[in-house]
Image (cartoon, rainbow, N blue to C red; front, top):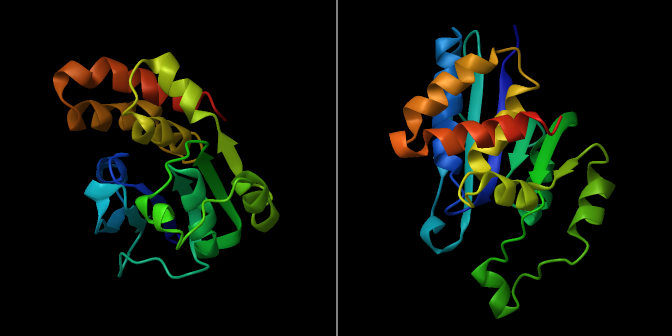
Length: 191
């Protein structure tokens, strides 16, 4: 079996680190060797956050090289475009339609493009842009993008839905279990 390389990208506060923890535990319980790595420098200030998760029979390094990601889940629209070069040509890419303009755009150093979706489709035509904004409103909690994206991921991997839900329920505070189950189910409905 070859290893599967999953890249999670977004900005601070979107729950990327929790999502990578949940994924890693799901894969461990399914019997895979798992390695992960995160970068969360200025996460508290809306900065970029990424997590590399690799699983398979034997994984030697947590880092995904450019051009080797099988799957990318982007929690923020522009981050999908900024990290696209990590994907294999036939990789699965799902991105949230959420736009969180980073503070660096205020300085004029980086410009957040108005046509981000169009640019993304040019470089990765099979990219799926998901209406996460409306789903967050339907679920009733603006902080569950991560669990919605885990629901999306669960539909393309051969691991039972209940195995995912068991880990999600263990990872969140008891008072938030119901909303997270609802978010996971909503994510599964996208594909």
